[in-house]
Length: 322
Image (cartoon, rainbow, N blue to C red; front, side, top):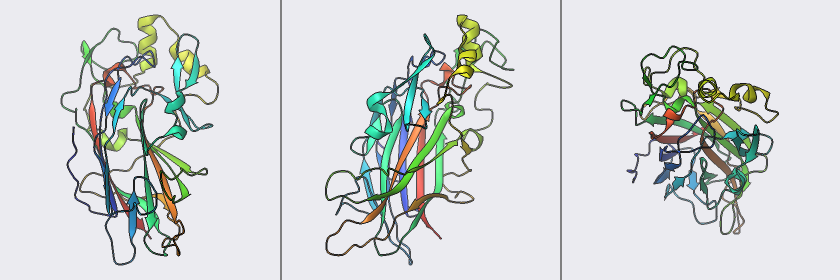
């Protein structure tokens, strides 16, 4: 699926599309083997006070007001974030252990993106002058394009479904989706791809509150996907989840502020500083390296298998902050 170009309204814009399919990683989530995010597009605009440039590589002479690259993800599965090692974990229900996704870890991101167990991509920002610019996310449009026609699953038990009524239920994937970024100072490179920052700071957000349309699925009350699975399978996933050692379960999330394609966030989300640009005599410039991650949290109590076969779009716009 090709993305149309987005009108640039701020210092940069990015657009992405993703689709969930089928997996067997977390036992209670029996869906999701393919996700597509084709046609990532980003661009910059200029104001009277600053010039912000953007790149998909972070190397010299590859800075633009707009960049585009294609990305197609396969085998996207629910995972857990390991903050100690900045990696993502799979869970083995047979022995209650977590294992690293290996080459799928963020540290192994290749050619600016990773499209496997989750979606991860790099964007680089730099100042076109000697100004040190503070970069922020100005606007976020995150839409579940499956709403109105969410897939349904037959309720096999009432346990774990809260006050859900009827013989079938649906789950909006935004209940379990996490939006995160790791941002930090880096340096431009002569060729290839600039490195992520070794001291990058991570911020992670739940999107359910402000990006899921009310009543867009049938879940209600105190639902719990772990308990639902346990009652059907006779397992002890809920108990095992609580007993996992660090790192375990979900990372701490903030609420992602409300925004859409025409409305800015009440306050821009700070990513970091570019450092001074316009280095003399061909020297490399200071830059800001940002890794964006989108993942389904396998430990979220809303991560039912009904999250499968859904699509969402993401559009981010960036700005220079005061």
